[in-house]
Image (cartoon, rainbow, N blue to C red; front, side):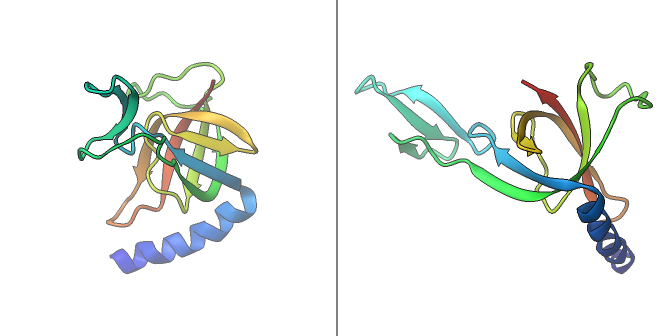
Amino acid sequence: MSDFYEGVYEDILPVVMQLGKPVTLVRSLASLGWVQVRDSITKELVWKNKDGRIQAEKPAEASFSGYGVQSSYSHYYGNDVTIKVGDLRIYTVELPLPKQGDTMFVSEEALQVISAKPIAPGELTLMYDVQLRKG
């Protein structure tokens, strides 16, 4: 069965690349496990990772490039997502699963990831359905 979905993915990818636009996902420091805290001894602000690492310099954000096809919520009636006027819906490929708090650049506009769900009818994720919000 997974061979079938790999074929479907190979068919989807060129269509999304042709009809969509390049997008960049920037993983937030929080979703990478970093928080800024005050050192109890020096009283200076430092960056601490969930695995216990501490560093003075701001950690680098991770970014990923892919493609997305923009859609809308005009005919969406799900009660599992809070949709506000102006929210964008984009279907992405070639990216890891976006997380709440990440930033996605679409046509050079920075948008915040509100939610993301994989579209995975089999074991292989074909694309992600991502809700984005300005500001």
